[in-house]
Image (tube, rainbow, N blue to C red; front, top):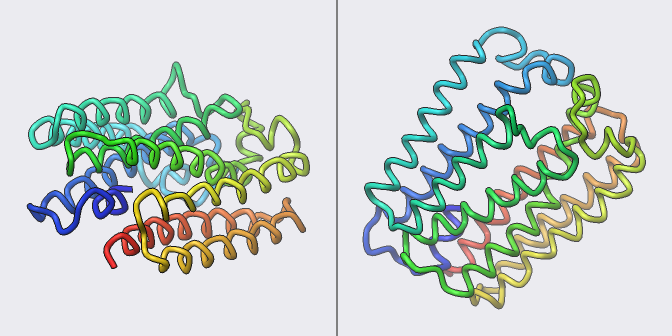
Amino acid sequence: MGIAAAPLVSWPPVHLWQAFLPAALIFAGSASAYMLNDAFDVEVDKVSNPSRPLPSGVLPARQVVVIASLVLFGSVLITLLLGSFTSLLLALVLCCLAFAYSVPPLRLRRFFVAPYLTIAASASLSFLLAASYWSGDLDSALVMGSILIFGYSSGSCMVKEFKDMEGDSRMGVRSLPVVLGVHAAVRVTIPIYLASCILVVPFFWLFGLSPAFFLFFGTVFLAKCSTSYDLVKDPFDMRRRMRILGVEVASTILLFLGIAASAIV
């Protein structure tokens, strides 16, 4: 999101750090949020991903929590020193969301659609955070772009729940596949997942992107359609669950790099 926001505000940057610092901070914050989630999801991962460092015992959960917390607070501190007041507020909210998603007593990760909304809010605010490093003020186009990102992310992150379904069920996490059952969850998830992808199309007009945007979008959408069809055929196959998640992560990165490139050329 940090890389995508930069060219949408202005290009080239007045200072080189403006192009890379927001992206680095958002990457560090996102990595820390994943680390927190993994640390508090150890029991789930012992079922779904037993070979990973935390559930296998290679890394102690407490140490991971300390490191993740320090990185999050460090990101906020850097924003306080180098960013605008708007950037600081957004960084504080993102930090709170990272803890609220994974850490008791809130642990929003447990509650039905709350994980999707939390992840989507984090993606949307990350976009605004990066943009605020550039402009200070957030115009209507950037705010509308963040709303579209919220919709895109709400749908795109739904497919991750299938990977952890068995672990979630044992640990009482009320994810969509656990509540509805795997077949019903697939019927609900896949249409939303694919429809949400279309929400990024207005970026073409909103930010005056070049036609190259549609090459990136078409590639991503076809990849998502392929893995979605694959999951529908056999939603119990763990390889298919992992494949759709892997393609989702890679395609989202490609899509927003494509948006950035289409704003420059």
